Amino acid sequence: MTIHIGAKPGEIAETVLMPGDPYRAKWVAETFLKNAVCVNEVRGMLGFTGTWNGNRVTVHGSGMGMPSMSIYANELMKDYGAQTLIRIGSIGAMQENIKVRDVIIAMTATSLSTPSSSIMKELNFAPCADYSLLEAAVAASRSRDVGVHVGSIYSSDTFYDERSDLTEQMMRHGIMGVEMEAAELYTLALRHKCRALGIMTVSDHLITGEALPSDQREKSFGDMVQIALETAFT
Image (cartoon, rainbow, N blue to C red):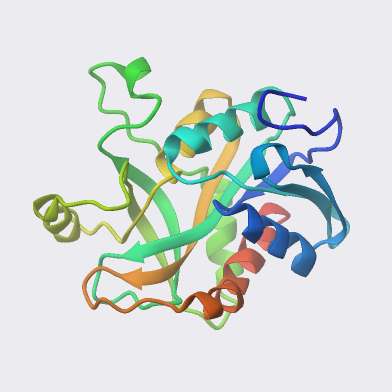
């Protein structure tokens, strides 16, 4: 048991899928896992452990933003022995060729700052995904009838961002989408010698203004979860 996770020793699997929303963690566990058991509900941040195709897996919420992700990822890796952590969640598209409901696999995650920035000091650190997971995710995505894009994303400190000039430059330099957690997860995984990857479904589009209605999000996120599970256990 840690400050933020009430699971007992042995209740967290080595492979952890991390949606931001704790209720999405519940949906994933109930929809994709067998014999899923709730192992954490401290502060309403739900975590479940079950099996998928005979493989033990935990689905645990991370909350919104990099500071929250940092808390849960640190404790999962340092105190519970998690070795493979895959972020599953939503992302806003920043390129015209990407469509709502497409899946983005993040090779790198750009940011203005992360909770780890104070450690890096003047270094402009470039956090990246684990290559073995990245390769497995690309292979797993080929069997899905969904648009898949692999490349760079932006992890933002703010949801209501008013830096239109920064957004324009990121679009100009090929950043595929914006979310709020991956850069810190990648940094922590590298620090603790674990594996991490972000696989995210496009829920809205910064250029077209299109957005996925809330009642359609769960069904659309199924491809992302299947790719993540296949990636983890390839």
